[in-house]
Amino acid sequence: MKNYRVKHREREFEKEVEKERVKLKANEFLNLDAILEGVMHKLVVRPLREHLYQLFVDEYTRSGAIQLLADNMRYARTKPAHELGIRPEILAPSGAALETICYYLTRLQEVDSPLEKLENLLTCISAIFNSVKSCNQGRGIALGADDFLPLFVWVLVQSGMMAAEIEAEYMWGLLHPSLLSGEGGYYLTTLSSAVHVLKNFRACSEEQSRVHGAGMGVDVRVGLLADFRSVLKIVVPDEVHGSIITKTLPVRPNMTTRDVCKIIAHKVRITNPQDYGLFKLVDGEETLLNDGECPQDIKGIVSQVGKHCMFAYKRIDAKIAWPTTSSSS
Image (cartoon, rainbow, N blue to C red):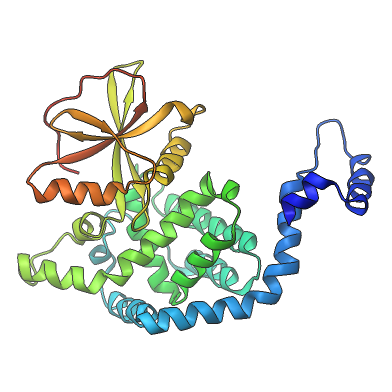
């Protein structure tokens, strides 16, 4: 419907555009796509919101997903921060800062528009970073994806956001893909990844306790991030300096190569992503992955035969001799 209006330039719509166009300064423009997206949310999504939510609730109640998340949140709330994977040297948000962060998560659940939900999510993320930066000032603490994800899991637990999975899927389903190619897509993926971690938290924690023994100071980060495939480590060759950069990305379950490439291209600021691809690295040999393949599944299959698998994001035409051995990720 939105594309129809833009392409066919309905007379009344065109008149309104012209009225606003004459008000523009030389360095301004009208983003018709964004304007119409917002209008469509108000006209179509808002009246359907309750119905959509009920469909989600019915489905997740039937599958047990809501109860599973709620049970794991209650269990996680009894655990100290380091058992959720937060490094002991990182001070988590508290007091007024935590209240502000939780406020934006509450607002996210209250608004109708998926775009407004995303804006509140990004504001929440920004508040987390600002709080950690303030609390850890002068201590040389930098948050990577493998640090931020456990921290965000902890925030969800503190907020008691039982509808986190529903909110994430609501945004994934209704936001225009163009809004998910940058920071929006990256941190919405982080939300989905955090939900996945939480739903499996108790099982992971108890399994590691069985393996390592109770009270042995188990590093739950290993289980959270590796066993449940909530992050993906990707190496990126720096062709100028001949070095390798490692990036850690949050991922959704069953995320495709196409979607992983969008996120990594954004994070490493690639301006010509069409020339790049994601490659599987096994014993120094590279294989280009198809857009529809799932890197997490591929890594699992390779691991089952006793091989170590990594992924590289590089120019498709670049000729690179990879090391035949690599550290585990």
